[in-house]
Length: 224
Image (cartoon, rainbow, N blue to C red; front, side):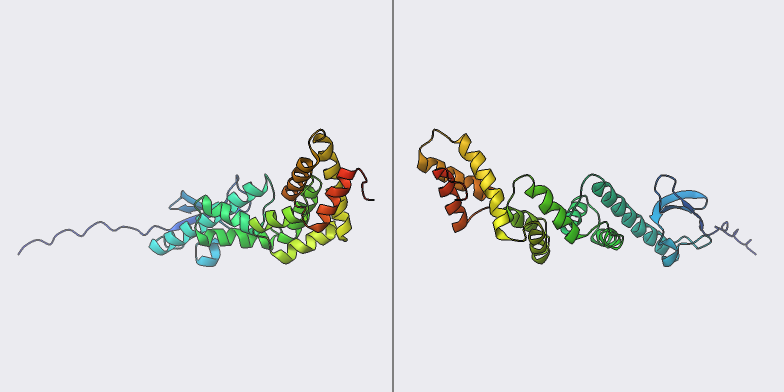
């Protein structure tokens, strides 16, 4: 009678052995598998079954990787906002360009909106105020904010808050035109007119009212 072959050694299942706060990332936790750090995830780990004692298998590994990617996108968002403000569309593009998955980007953006870190209405208001102080007019601001993906209605609200009456924006255009006109002194009148109109158009001022304004400035009559 042939002797029986020895049974293969028993392999114990790997398990999640801990979720501990990450000292370098407030609000994040380090996931430990068999006592060793595997990755850092956000605090939503328990909601997908990643808890101490749970079996570590392909399903849990994939869930942990997804949460780790979401945490990475969130940290990238916080880092970007720490340097300057962003519109929702602009920060979404930035995270996508850095290689984060669409799902992780959506998680980070939604979290930022829920916490009030991303607010296109506030972004548009601040953008208009700061750029208007640098001499940008309504037309330029509309174009710039459109490129940044801000909703047109929010842009118009921000412009009305800055310039409740159209004449207030024209006052800025006049200041710019008078200053620029002095720099163009000595040139033929028609050349000065063309350059003033082009200068104001780049700054976001155009239309019949701007044509009249340039005429008055060249006449030296101001607002007349």
